Image (spheres, chains in turn blue, yellow):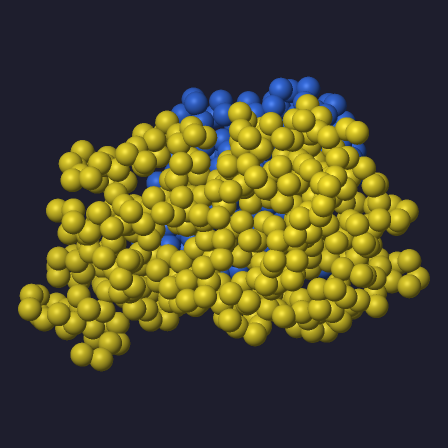
Length: 169
Length: 434
């Protein structure tokens, strides 16, 4: 019951705080792609992998009072901060989901910026393609982001690091 | 003349209750409609289990796909044709992508995909790129053409304008299904002035935009969408049928994995259970096959499978109460324990269904670059997001409305022949009148 909600709460609890909806989307997508059993379905959208189910589930968690969403103005746009509330923590203590090493991976992702996570998630989205095709996809589909070759190499290295963390454990 | 430009000697028309006629002049489109993979869509209902609530909702993905094609045909032939930012060479690409966008849907795909961890978008890609009749037609246009169509449908093409015709917050897909679903369910909510919207659509750099003068027609469309979600798509009775269907599939999967001996071997499902699924296996499955199994599984020795199939086929659905997870999750644990005591398996007979479990979306103004919003093209040339200009859209797009229901079999709980006292406790907790 409400297992998929509990998994998301666990992800946010493990991260302490997640700043930005975009970052949250990309973190869950990357976690799902590397191994963790999140059920939300992602599709490629204008800004990379995006899950409407995830957005709705986060809204439900906020409505339930399990998740705190703080809206703050940052420059010309709004940004949202997500943390677990006390009742959320209580719910989670009774409905914990076993996801070993999730905390380590999410903390690592949380330390990256949303721009880099957008690149990592895009690279992962095209993991069925050859590397040179992936690079071409990044340059054509993410033209406005102006990613450099160095950043793409870093994204690949980062994915390997995440996968190694999971393998080692 | 090259195949991509060949026209039929006479225009073919399909009579259509929503668009009056669907017009086909292109040989490629006519050939695609005739492929077995496209014809299969006749055997898959557009709205899954909704027919158990709104009896008219028997229309198929075939109807809808033709409708999407027709809307795109009108846009590219009548509205965009001579526009400066429209590339006429994208015409056939747009028509094919519109026609084929739902090709990978399976029977009752929402439940099916959830249980077997599948994605119809993946199968759409496989049908277009694999060894299929659809692929053969597209390849005749150009060897690279199937890939281009697949990338538009998968939203990974560099051609953002064509993507936004088929998949954006105001696209041909949504415009067709809102009107078609309203027509077949018989409700009056899904009406909006599509002709007006089509006339004010403009290709603009990476996205199709709406001329400012068309804002009120778009408001109407957003309102229709909102109403259809709550009145039709999220209807609690449909969700009850969906819950039972999902549980049937879960049960049959569980039984197979435990080595249960079926009276009628579920041959069509074996590849799904064993993770050896091929495209051929997938394409063999349609609603008539599923209904056949639901019929024969009623005679299975497993009481849960038999009962759930009887319920689905005979529309003896679960009842529901509103459920507030924040206040009632402890009660849910208590109920679950009581169900166990009463000998009613809570995994199958006590189910929370949330609005996030449903595959529909609302208009989102695209904060923090989540989804591309609807943009208005102002007279000054400025571009403005819709909800910043429209108070009506702003009023419904900023408000979160979520919904959870708790489903259970009322008839079993009211049957006091066994475990009378426990069932009474359950009824009290569920606030059921005894």
